[in-house]
Image (cartoon, rainbow, N blue to C red):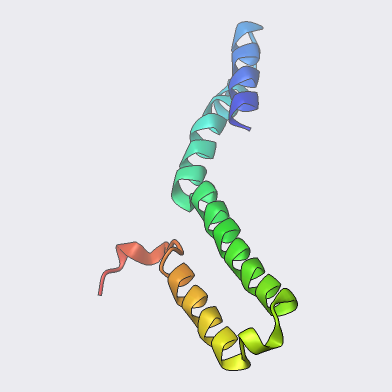
Length: 100
């Protein structure tokens, strides 16, 4: 989006477009995309999801393929709770401006 907005603004400005507002909007797209990406930090959230999913998939494989005598429901529950608590700490909170 950012690259497309930048290229479009350059083309509009270079061709002598009479719609200055359109050129201004296109020129503002890269900054808007950067601001949204910085604010919401999509990459960090994606990494958090990936790591959490991989840990839970490992636990699921253990449940599916381990011998029943190697674990019980209590052990699985404890491991799930550990994963849940550890991954919760990595979640991004946007309300960090309001400190209590």
